[in-house]
Length: 380
Image 1 (cartoon, helix red, strand yellow):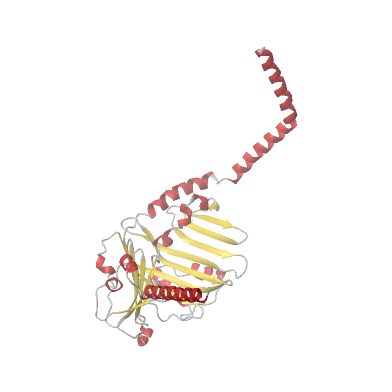
Image 2 (image 1 turned 180 degrees about the vertical axis):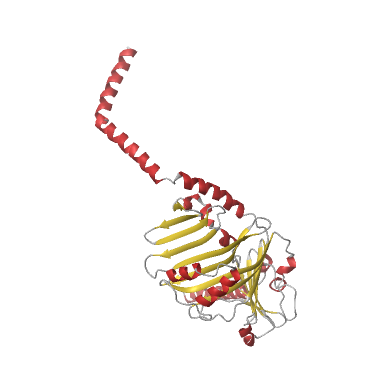
């Protein structure tokens, strides 16, 4: 009985399957399956490129952690259209020619040549000093000679201090100090050495890679823009990165990095960096950095990050309300700006003029509402 039922079920299933999936459909299925497998294999990264990327990924991972602290002295030339010093309105192609034709004997000579060829006015280039001891970072610059006549107070250095949660900016020309929430490191160590986006496989896999004799080129070409990265095939150090929009204003950005050096610890770093922003396919902002001295992983005392405030300097604290910053007058010299504005956590709990104003308005509205309600009741 049971055996007969099973045989009947088997015959029914055979007929059903024969109607659902015919031999022709099975052939089509396997053809599509195999074709898809072949397509997937063709679209995958070349084995040689994949091997290079796997090695470079390990290098990039090590680069992210090999610098614990940094003390860097550098010169920074900045030029912008409409603001002195003005940069020449060059196309990306023209900038490429200028940068790649500079004197290759030394970074100092190349820097001087680039400043001369890329800027209309190159008379004032200040020296900078950068300290990095996470979470704190600070960049300082002396006031350039031609701006000294405009000084209003005793401040003579531009300073940007980031302590991990607050940014403090010292402005000598306006004799004031501004404190704001958040911010970021004023000088990017990571950007100068490798492209952080490649640490994410989801982003890396969108690029096409080509291996040349001594460098690896990565490109991402879409309908909107074209992104290019060129890095040393052995060290992974990035010596060119570009991003250009294809439509609209055709804005873009290029960064060239030259004269890489290696310190006794084996840490590699570029001596010269050129950063160009384009608007309407014309150079709008050009920044050139010349690294004069770099010391990594040395002890940086905390006193370095103490920003002194001379008497009479205006301090504007924007952390509570950027539209109505709190004005704090410093009546005597202090060793640390934060001793004036106070700790951020404690400060946020303090009574504040803006907070009192909001409470006062709310109380007045409540009183008016009560008066209107009582008048309304009496008139009924």
